[in-house]
Image (cartoon, rainbow, N blue to C red):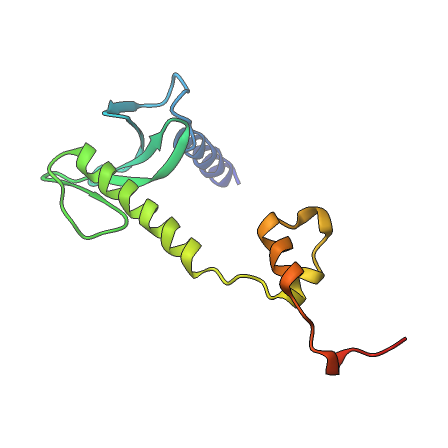
Amino acid sequence: MISTFLQQTELEESLDKILLPPSNPNAEVMEILGYKLVYVGGACPRNYRVYTDDSMIGVIFQHITHWSNGVDSLRYAEPVDAAVGLEQFMKVARVLKANTEQLPTEEELLDIEFDSLTSENWERLKRYVPKTRDLVAV
């Protein structure tokens, strides 16, 4: 019972250290060219969360001979290169996701609250002509 309590307490303390924001005075922070690296844990590789301003963009790893990030298989000589590679990947991923999202059909737009519709949605609905064979007089 005591060992379980101690293990749980140690886990909670380690989670508190892992989740420290870069603004916390107890966080181990490394600042490099527009990025803040916050040490999370690990010996080899050492794990760092990467922040731009106050937004976390991902994780990079410090190995004995190189740096890497979690999104590609490249080895980087400097931490800034690993952080830049991570940020570029995340930007491309956002663009690809935005381009692959399906627009709702006009029928689906009719089910959305009026206040939630964008001006583009309103323009689509103005041009929409429902199929007359599906209409029923009430």
